Image (tube, rainbow, N blue to C red):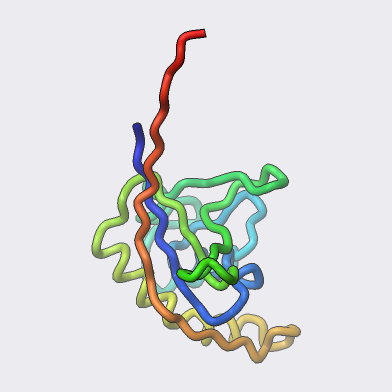
Length: 148
């Protein structure tokens, strides 16, 4: 039996448009596709934590493969009512510390403003985002063995 953790940021917008950028901004970690590298760089610059390959979150996060086999530490997730994919789920191998959770919450709150600065000449230059809340979910895996 194993336990993993999922830190979820609930928002008012479709998370598929920004989940990898947000994860990089709040943790400094990106996936195989390297989406969010500029936000990971901002994380390192603003927090002084880590380098291009490792931050305080690196040993905690889990990289999960998407439908195309690309590993990444996050994905869009259903909101608390299970109706829309307006949440960002960040996957953890082990429970994040209270300090990590507070840092992620603080940085998530500043994410929209930073995204507007980075993409000022892009289609999403008017990007707006409201954070509705945060959740920490314990994911438990069990196995049952049967004789064959």
